[in-house]
Image (cartoon, rainbow, N blue to C red; front, side):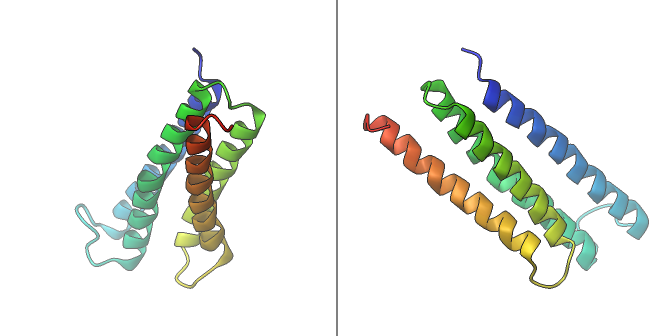
Length: 130
């Protein structure tokens, strides 16, 4: 079974992940910090944005893959996945700011809603109700 949605989203996640690694590398070079955060607040923000991506993305991909494997995915699943990835990028942009902002908030809410929504879908599929 070819999981087109999951494969496409995993590819998008890999590209975003490399972008996040490059941002940290650029900041490390500019600030001359080789290990840890060196007490640099901006580097810490970028590291946390990267880690937040790493914390949230695998679970979303797993849930999307499970739904897709049941054959109950479709275009709606691809849209949810795309919105999740967009939310992750918005969160990263928001993390570069020191104040509370809409980018970070939207990114956080998008991740939470994606996880909860897909969890509900998985349970409904398991119960034969979806």
